[in-house]
Image (cartoon, rainbow, N blue to C red):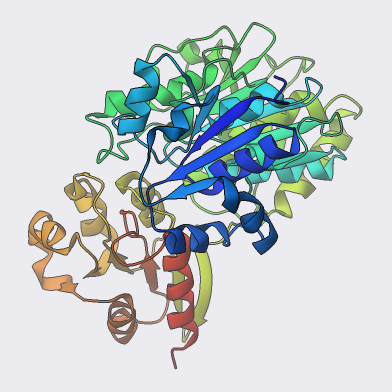
Length: 472
């Protein structure tokens, strides 16, 4: 898509909107940006990711405080993923027949055709999986960038040039809502569990945009799927990409004809229906720094996503050795089961990114010791009682924080003897520390968004770190 001389409207001045605006200006387009927030609030958001110079460059083309109809006088509107379709300007644009796309679609339309896309979606594990994909490809010598819902926006890179081998993208349901022609050469759907039910009416509405990641794939593309995921197994998968399934256990006879990877004795087995591989390959995972069953799933998805690419110039022995070394050198991302500190045998683990019940299940399952669980935050409409079985099995102390405290206290009423409620995170951490014994874990796994008390999950995790490091 040529942008020179076109009028591009940007609805929402968050990270992706700013990136699209800067890219449009650099390619000769006229830009108009509309954000209904106060200018001071917008500037604070922008300067988290962009420079003062970039802010000043865009300022003459912006309106703040309200959306006016001025944005409708454009050829194309790029909408930020946080803007719902119920937005008034969004509705007016559709009524006038204007083209409205997301930043992912926008970037796809201007990227150089030589660059291949590896895209990952799902409810949990996206960031770890795409980061591992990026890490492996870098170790194998490819020029690769990582963005989307993690790090930089898709359009912030020099994607219009032919210098990038692979673009690795983490994609949320919000970002996938507004794609039309976007196509990933390799796509992966990790899992589907209830999330963002404050925005979607039901899990089926949440699932629909996730499935769009494969909608434009052809037979030359690859789609990687979690064969153990119940929601995916009963969903109608769209697109014509070649499907590779991964499983926790050795596949049954029924599953074997579609299985591409599974786990066996803490090893990853790649089986022979992956192109160019005629035998089973065993990748040892015992030295990986990623712990927990969910991370074994993430590793399987990541390896399948890169396997055809990295296996070309190596013997099987060389490939396994180099791949194992790459996996073993990868460390957990911040705020994802991150060990912050150990004091007198008590481990303090930051899993601030656990923003739904399913991710908390993974976190609780990762530890055998007694767990002191700090939970709560901004409610996204989930049923927290789904955690009750694991809490009964593994949790010695339950510490509620945030806007969900009252709801959680009702849903966890059977745990009154171990449950406490706090106004702030620091009080919860100090109480958990006072009760935890050696070899036990103080775990921040909120099962909620952070917007009631913090700017985002990263801010929440940073505050937790700071509190823990200040303990004596």
